[in-house]
Image (cartoon, rainbow, N blue to C red; front, side, top):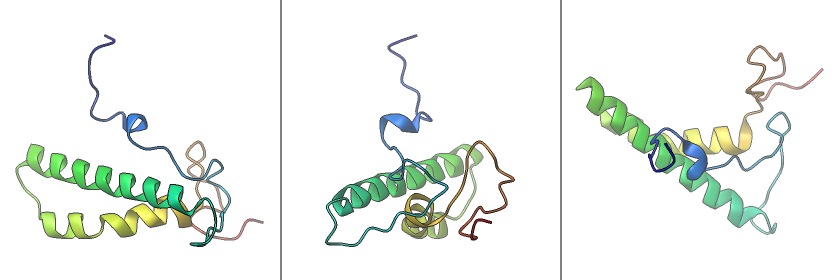
Length: 100
């Protein structure tokens, strides 16, 4: 169905800042890529908050304070700091560890 909206299709709202998530890419405020990093991270934080509220609403329980306040930290870590490979979750150099 082409006209149906999928709320879990995050690709319409956000794409990862780094093309290669297995490598760390340094970006400083004076770099030309900094505005794109900020935009991407803000969009990801918004999605984290939205999905947290959706999950708590569906479950009819939860504490929104913690979930909503840590959204920025999670967005920065996932979009900028952590190294991961979504196709290989057992990759030994994941989560910021040095590759061998």
